[in-house]
Length: 245
Image 1 (cartoon, rainbow, N blue to C red):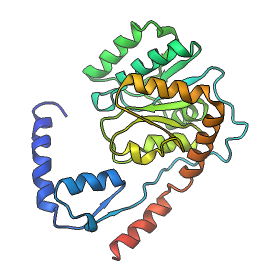
Image 2 (cartoon, helix red, strand yellow):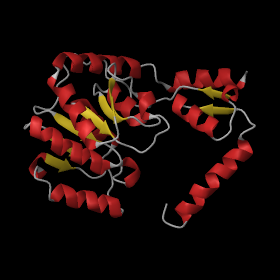
Image 3 (spheres, rainbow, N blue to C red):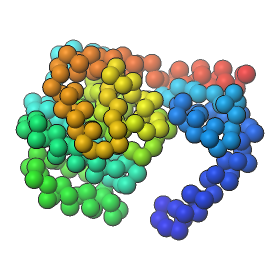
Image 4 (spheres, rainbow, N blue to C red):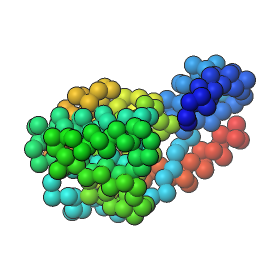
């Protein structure tokens, strides 16, 4: 939110969380549970339940056609919390090792950060290999997830990282920062890669993943299989069990 509303929310959150800390709570990831514990909640009173995605996983990833050139995709609004500029920098670094690499970006760019991002794309030495798509429909988002090779996610923090699971359901593994939520939605070197919070580290992971076809196929397959279990049905069952305790 705009200042000073953002400051009010930032200062108020720890206060109202302290008022609730004696109550039982539900969280959608272990990271969120740990965060609540830091705010005074009792670990035993917090139950972690499954997330759910509405996007149906593709039936099989075998023979599913990707873009002709290796392609990094970025989905979500272009704002500071998402640190999309980090993804651009990681792409530019990775491009030096993989000259054919492309970058497709979707999401609104309405605020100052978004406009800065668009300016950086315009002046990038690899601008011709970057495509900014603006806001996309659910169908277009699904198509990007199906045909892209890897999704980059650099958020400051997430509750889970639904975009990671959605991409996995369409056969695309993720390279993400080691932050709350993202470290839950990716199993390192099993369904994707988790890196330190710097474009240089993300770039190395992208290059490593795209150059190692055996690892890529394994992560792609594992991520797709895991996504099948992250459903609202599982979330509902976890919720029922939690409130019956």
